[in-house]
Image (cartoon, rainbow, N blue to C red; front, side, top):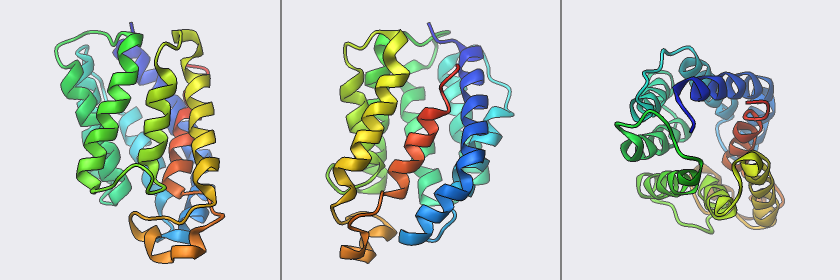
Length: 198
């Protein structure tokens, strides 16, 4: 079971990794957006990593969502908060997350983020990465989950790289977005990479 202490450790790892990747993410976002994605992600996870998490893992995930709401008014920060809230609802009242529940939590986050951001699968966005990870994690042993998720997220970036962006600010760049990694997908990959060692 993944308890609140494990979530706290994961948040620390993600905060450290996304801080290192902040400049890269801002640069990628600058090509298709307003260039603040690295700051949004790193500040959000730094805030979450500094929060005291209760034993109830649902409330712990809600605490993470609220951390993003406090420090980020960007659309990506809002979407991440939405995803954490969706997972929090499913886990409320529990003291641990069962590994076999993780694909369903990722899928719930995907669906909630899709509804909030009015996006669709195939738009070349973080939604596509969440979908790929949710599918890849089904029937994956716990010990292989992080590597499997990272591989699925990386492959999703490449699958959509040569397609135009159809969601968010990036959609305004049309054909100019072809050949570029979607910043939101790249940020999600860096988030997952932060789980290594947890």
